Length: 278
Image (cartoon, rainbow, N blue to C red; front, side, top):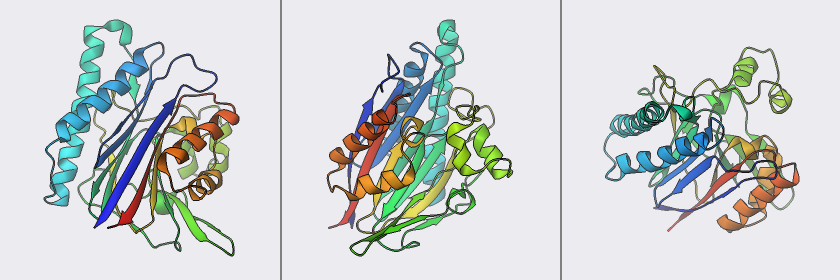
């Protein structure tokens, strides 16, 4: 049996006056939501997401993979509806929305779902390919980010080898440009359209989350984060920070500090989860 030990932290950052990010940490469910809409609107949207999704999934248990994905999809769609309903009740919140990246832990597997540009990374101490993302048939647009967008980054020295793998695919204008070959992945962080997302809760319409399963190994570490982290802290630094500590709270603090030291231009939210056999 593989046990998950998670910690989540959020920070307003240096440049912002309010925090529109929200997160949720439970024994088997993790969520990061990055709100948008200005003033308090983004905070309202992200707060609704991390409230409603866990409520809808509180009694979830392992059955068929397709049934679990159906349940998680419906929970996310319910949050989308709640955000839309809130804007009807309060027109000043019109246009608010939120990204969501979530992880559900089932023994030796993770189900990862995402909407928007909040990300999930897996850091492994072993060789590339030790963990195995697998596609699923029941998602309307199954994510293939692990091979299409970012290959695992091999890290190592004489003492330790490993890799970092992004296992979610951003729903954003710049990622569409990467896929079409117009820009490289390295240009995402400086592109003028880098904050333009193409899918979010509050305006899903006919869209749904992307999902993938990930087979966990002993010693793996999962990072869920808002773009306030990954836009400023590159993957090699995330990997180095994770390898510098075995304490998940310490890792969260170090990553947030790294983002603030790099400018802290956005809210920063990080969930770190370690996995070990027991």
